[in-house]
Length: 105
Image 1: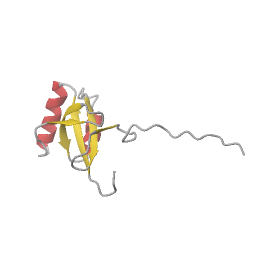
Image 2: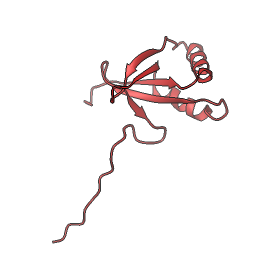
Image 3: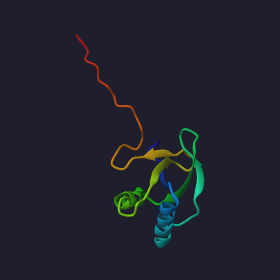
């Protein structure tokens, strides 16, 4: 991802209740658009709503237990990038940790 790429955010409801809640919340803040089908980095298709920023997603995470919400959040770099999963409170991408080896002198 280049430093000038804009990051776009998406949310995928995993059930009809969550879909209804997300759609109504997006409508209330004038951000509602029909969901669209998009591919992730592994070629799997997802039906997602685009959201302005990850702030909306963090609000969903805060309400997920009280409102019984089931969803996934994705991001992409640039207009035509693939979707990547976003973990609340974690790293943006699933990368393997770097293991340092003890080098003997």
